[in-house]
Length: 291
Image 1 (cartoon, rainbow, N blue to C red):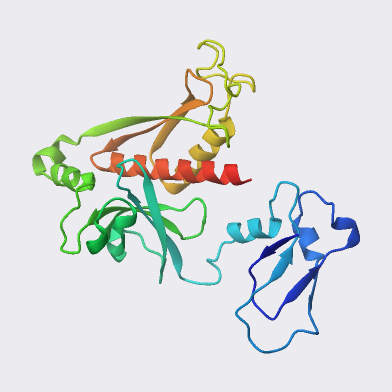
Image 2 (cartoon, one colour; image 1 turned 120 degrees about the horizontal axis):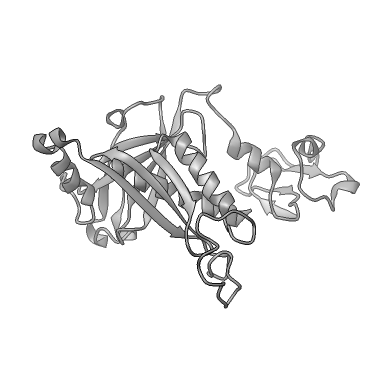
């Protein structure tokens, strides 16, 4: 049994005796739970919340999965916008969620927002406010519906780009008429290596050891040569759903190593699409590690 938060008064999930050793709980099994109010509970409010749930063998709760997959579009006009920006290292991604009153089609319809830059290595503690400017939006493949991912860049409260905001200068260059008239195309390759959970060793490698020489792994097929294809495929489909201009993917020369390509894209769009694709990849990998 595991303790999780739920509203008071206390409710007890009474589990049929033959289900206590069940494996993955199905939606039907959840429906069979008898939810009865504890008659002994008092009616006064309490700051303490308690409920009980059964964990399956792999610690996945089917009901939680149902909630994560729920499309709230039929019930509300409001959407969730995930504001995403690059952190202080220049390669780490940060994000925070905001409720927006209605669906939007352009970043100009979104409000600016702020965050504590001293916690991301982008501002001193005594003057830590950093402002997020929405710059590009994509459909959210995780929440679905009208929810969106928002690529932002970062500014001081006075409107000056902070030092780690490289997008500002790029946008300045790409907005020049001479550059626009050239219609600059970009195709970007992003390589990455998948690591085994807990041991931080490449997927497909023997722990603490090394694989055979390169040759069989590049663009390979087969469980003994192509490691992590499910992650690559999930990322590919999520990017297409989001509206990212992803043009392909393939296994690389090392076991556990993959790459995807974005483009051809015009101007600054290439960078926005690559960074959103990186964010999606990190979230997908995190989800898989938690399963």
